[in-house]
View: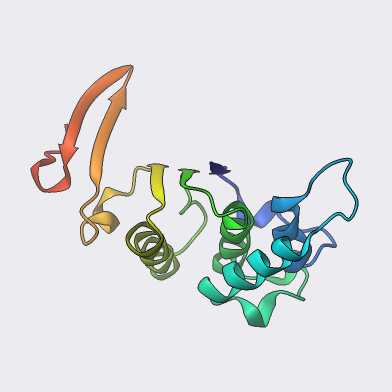
Length: 152
């Protein structure tokens, strides 16, 4: 299981590269070597799948919002989770980058069979994916198909 917290991407500006950020997703405390061959192979795969090979050596603060979000997503995917929980992953992203992010998530779900649980207010952009929706406001207000959602 993995978690991607809601982040104000403008606040991510410290002297670490995208590679370093991603690799922290598989750190094993009190273990040497810090990263195994398997960790490095997982890094190559997740970077390739998210198409971020060209930015892995750049400082996180030098990246665009969409690039930062892909790096954070790569960090949460590096251990090949079966379930990923995302909290408003589109925060701070423009509409085109948001759509791209949702396509990546849809691909993960369909091709890698990753269960995605996402908190969002951005249902209009999910129409093409047609996810199952659970609307919660103190209790469950709706649980069902996107096509039947009435915006309760």
